[in-house]
Image (tube, rainbow, N blue to C red):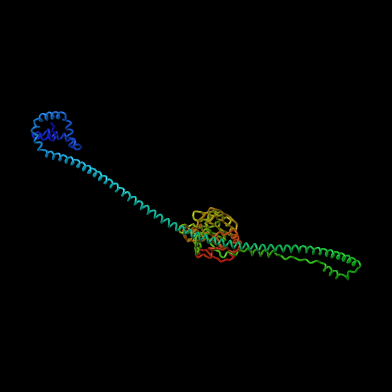
Length: 500
């Protein structure tokens, strides 16, 4: 006999109106279907509590009623097979529904996780975009600052290039002038050499002629000596005759011939003309200094006594020479020259001050750089010639007093440029452009032949100026360029220094 399955047992239980055991059996035997859900977990816990006792009880009860019900339900089972088929289909549908619901729940959970990850990703992207925008703003500001600095650097470079162009133009002018001077000097040297060679040849010819004349003179002197001896013998004979004539009392008839003979025999004496006075006159003419042109007189120490030039430096200066004759009876040497610009009032200054023991003045180029120049030998009330030379290319300076080098030095404002566009004043020291004078710094005395060159003169040219020769070329400013006289300053025209 075949045992009934679970579905048949459920039908038998329904026919007898008992519901507890079949429900338990349904729940117990359908644990695999409900596994993984909350309901399946509860059934497993329930089965574990009452598993053993209720199983034996149920098996006993089933075996007792099995025989009775088998016969009665044989025919009813056949009729109820469609219902079990539906139940089985429902179970399968329920199982598929569970599987589908589980898959849907898993999809929903995965979608929830994806959405949460998407939110996090969007949040991170937003933060990244904020960071990128901040970085771009910083980069924008940095680029603007860099562009501003580049513009300022470009302006500075343009200014520097302009200055360099001016410097190059001035250098070209200086080089051209120097080349011209060198060519002139070479021509003069060649002419001097040719003149010297001609003079040497003339001197040689003269020496040879003098040697020939000397030999001739020696011969003539020998002949003269013979004649003198002969005349001496004649004179001795004549004296003997005279003695004999006197002894014979014959002197009265022969005196005239004796006097005539004595006069004929007497030699001639040639006296040299005095040449000392002529030499003194010639020396005085050569020593006269007539390249002065004009003189400025500063009567006393006052801030009102000064002279200003009408024109300025046309370009910047890399070399300069300042020469002048000066005479002062004061016990100090004030400020001879002052050149000031808007940015610096001491671009070029020969600064002196009334002090108890003054021995030097300051030669200033671009404050605060200066050098001290001795002036003690200039304070004797006589005319002295002063020349000051400065070169930016080598950073050297030279200071001449009466064509002698009194001071020199190097490393003084090398590469510096004295700019154009300033104010040049004689006799006062400027603390600002055209003003700010001090009475103790004013110049007292006379200045003559004041000249400024835009190049460095040579020692030969300095000596030529001091000895009264013509002034060298390349003059920039002289006293003829003075436009304004202030206070008691007077301007005199005097060609030679002894007339000033």
